[in-house]
Length: 95
Image 1 (cartoon, rainbow, N blue to C red):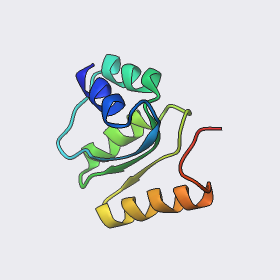
Image 2: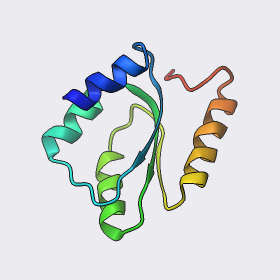
Image 3: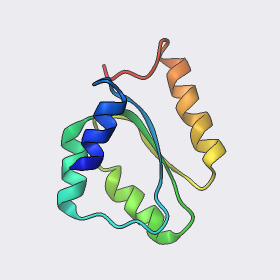
Image 4: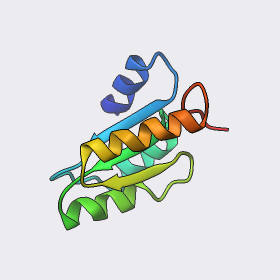
């Protein structure tokens, strides 16, 4: 998938935290699987505002390879990502 390739290119191959605004987004099972297998991120904060957004976030969050959470506030999502980085020292890394 092109978005996975872009993420990996921007991060120089390192797994970095990702904030995703998921308003009005739909994702196929195949796309969800591709993102889960890519493991291109160290944590995912998903921001949305509708019940549908929350359902999409739940579907994306079924994997277990990194921390993930759903927020209705971008500021809270960013704070959560920063707190994870702080709690792990030099950044978010998968053990």
